[in-house]
Length: 292
Image (cartoon, rainbow, N blue to C red; front, side, top):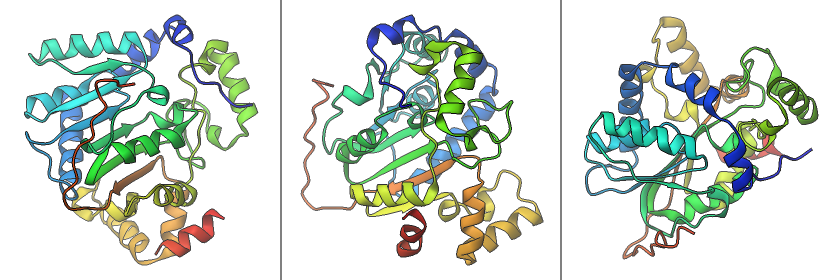
């Protein structure tokens, strides 16, 4: 069973209010701002982002990323599938005295331009996108030479799934079983918007990212250091150090990690110009071996 792409009518008819309310109360403003600061610090290691930069956010959601970018003077554009989230993002931005730039559209069928953005963000969105491969290809084409793509999504063998945390090992189940559970729990309309249709794996996802053309595809262990750990205990520091030194330890940790996290760098080129179409809006061998 493959989840179909949502039509505009199906999206409009889907009531995402429960999801929106859950997201509103999931984190404090202070925590969200701290997470944004950490993300910006991470991205700046690969591509400095400031008032002269241009960022695209795929799946704007409630609009927090837009708000924090605007408050720091960083230009950011977003694309969002659902009207209720665009309205929520506009309301949130108004509370902070900023104005977001979010287009109501489906990223699967929308052109976001070529070599226009310094960074493209796709956080907790590709697990809901049936044609995720084409979305990543679009992100690659939309990046300027030297630009960075940041993604966070589901991990097949995570012990708990963020979309359905009440059932341990839920994401391990075959797609047919998972979809049956979600439809029984949330109704058949969940299949058109809101179901975790994709369960990624680090080796195969890294292989795909490199095949798209990215010069680098750095995973969670690659980009983490002791100072960036949320809970830098002695045990956590030791586990991270082991994962960085041992391929087997790294593979085991990433296999069961809570999410797939990648920072991908596009190769640089001299004299590149932005071909913007936004007006239409329309050791690698080891990982390849594991992916085969």
